[in-house]
Image (cartoon, rainbow, N blue to C red; front, side, top):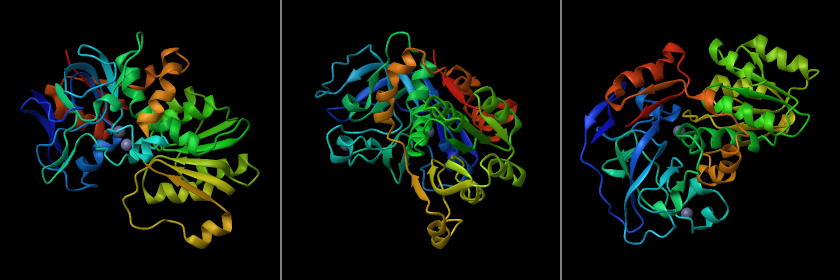
Length: 349
Ligand SMILES: [Zn+2]
Ligand SMILES: [Zn+2]
C-alpha cells in the first residue's frame, strides 16, 4: 500500500509499505477514504518532538471502511461499515475510559507514533490497523460527510474540549490565541456555548478573516492586540483564555490577557521545561491552569448527533485536498501555510 512516511526532520514522503494485518482479537483493518494532516503531525516534522522511527506512517485522523475484523471484535459494527476514529485508541473498560478521559486510557496508543519499533502506525495510508477497534471506532451516521467525521475525530472535539475547559458561559468575554483549525473550532464552540464576546488572536491575516466570519473579533498577536482585550474588559482581562499555540510567547500573552480568577485553557503542546509566568504571579492572579490531550473518543460521541443535524457547519475548515502520492508536497504546503492552507487532507479513491 501507499503511505505518507516520516523520513527525517523536514521530510515526509509517499512510500510503499506492507499492508497491515490483524494482530489482536479486537483489531480491525480499515480501508481509509480520508486522512487528515494535523498540527501535531508537524511536531516530529519540525523536530520539536524527537524519537519517531524513520519509515513510520504518519497521521491520526481518519474515515474509512472496515475490511477485516479480529476474532473477538464485538460492537455491532461489521465489515463494510463506514467508520471514524479518535486520534488514539481506547479500551472502553479502564478507570480513565470510565470517567470519559479516553485520552489517558491505560491501554491506549496514539496513531502515527512508532519509537524503537514500538507503537502504532498512522493512518495517512491506504489501510490502517486499529487495535481495540470495538471501542475506538464509531460508525459514521448516514448523511455525515467524510470531512465532518474526520474533524469530529480530532480537531472539532479538541476545540470543543478547549472551550469546555475554559468554562465558557453566556455573557462572558473570551480570548482564543492561535487560529489554526482547532482554534477556529474553539471559537465556533465558545459562541455555541453563549459567549458574548470572543477575541481571536493570530499573526496570520487569512486566519483572522475566517475567525471574524465565525463571529469573533480579530486581533493581531502583539501588544496592541493585548491592549484591545484589556480595554474591552475595563482593564480586567478576559474571563478565560484558550491558548492553542504551544509557545512561550503565547503562554505569556494568555497570562497577560487573563483576568484575576480566570481560567487558562491550554491545548497548545508546550515543549519547553518551564512556564513563562511564575508560581507567585499565578497566585497573585488566582488563575486556574487547565490543559491536556483531548479525550476525543469521548467528545466525538457527545458531538456527533449535533454535527449530523447540521448544528455546526464544519465545511469551511478543510482548505486543501491531496492524493497520497503528493505526500511530500502536502507536508510542504501544510507546514508553511502556503496557498492559504488551513487544514489539509489526503483523499483515497
Ligand atoms: Zn491531531
Ligand atoms: Zn481504557
